[in-house]
Length: 388
Image 1 (cartoon, rainbow, N blue to C red):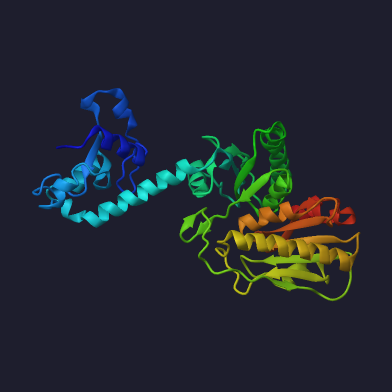
Image 2 (image 1 turned 60 degrees about the horizontal axis):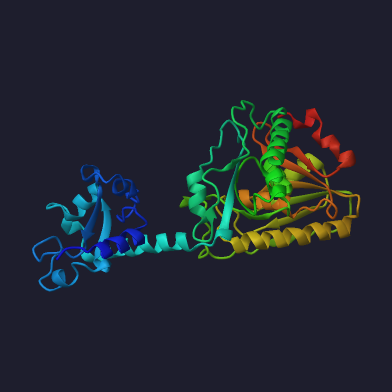
């Protein structure tokens, strides 16, 4: 007795037509469709061998499980040879192969169980940081959507500007990048949202912080948006719910003044002296954490808490400093938090912002972007203040 047609059909379905060896996932359906047995690279492999003398064979179980789908795996040719090879089969005991099968079939089931409404359009935004371009990959972004969503299109919406040779310490870089971002957003995102083509966006962004804020401002609340964070250790865009929660600390200064500083120290510590070197003696508000570092944001709940905290701080600054105040922002933020900062800011409710960026060539912060009408504070964005 061999493997029945029914069991083969069930196995192909459970495996999604792909090799079940861990880390392979090679598509095997093409060989089945061709009908040419000479080209076939798909094999139905037994975990417990179909004969007692085969790899992982058993005097009793081999006969009992020969046509049991729970004992079958779909394999590509190289991995079938590996798990049953005379010199290698002992490296693949029953328990190891069963674990591979369970993980693979659970992943296939999760992917196919998502409702059509869970589709999300992937938006990639990258801009040159220093001397380096920041290429973003669609495949890694698509992986990060799982298990809650799936990629609604087989390609990303791209907002990055390729081939730009200016660096972010040069004055010409900022207006060029900001204007390009706005135009591409209008063309590739906003128009599609108006037409109803896009119901949900998943945002993956790597750029200097002022441009990330501008990206968030453009996104605003026009569509359902999930902003992802790139993690360093281990690297990836997926959210990691098991990390400990962040506790945000808000610093509220005494006194008044039309020009206000807001330092956002999540990825690094920002001292008051660095701000005073730019603005002089001004009230300095802050949002920080106990131990800032560049891989600090791992939970969606922490990103939501940052939004809520920032919303409150914007309101409190306006209440204390008046309707005509301007907030100078000094950010050291995870990329997702910088984007969310732009989304939090409301044009009719919030004070205008001047967003600064750390410039190594100049040894300090430089103003790079305005959000809203900053009036007299536009002085800070004159060419002589932009140059490194």
